[in-house]
Length: 121
Image (cartoon, rainbow, N blue to C red; front, top):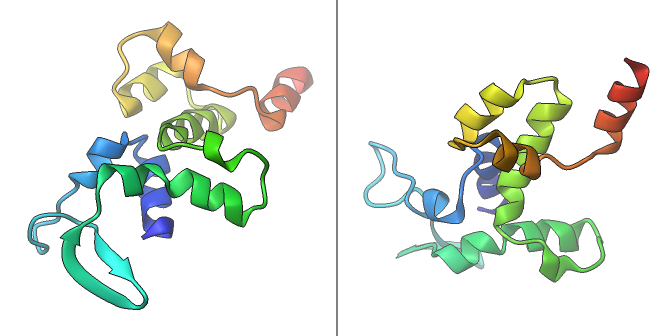
């Protein structure tokens, strides 16, 4: 669930509410179900669990201040990865559903890749 939630959250610039409410025609109710100790139950994964995905990933990567990594990091990572790949701000806004350019630009982190790309231009 952590891997799938991370991938979908970043690829879709999803809010945790959006991840929690994902549905697929072949799956009843919600895409994510409770999974623990190798067993799956019909209890759906909630917003708080989904919001903890980035802190679980940060912990796995042995980053400091893992509590600072919240579900919102998925949207921020999505915007930053798109910007690093050279995607224009209009496309990023459409992808994440932002109307304001200022808001969209606020989500793009100044990554090393982006700084290097700008310096090389």
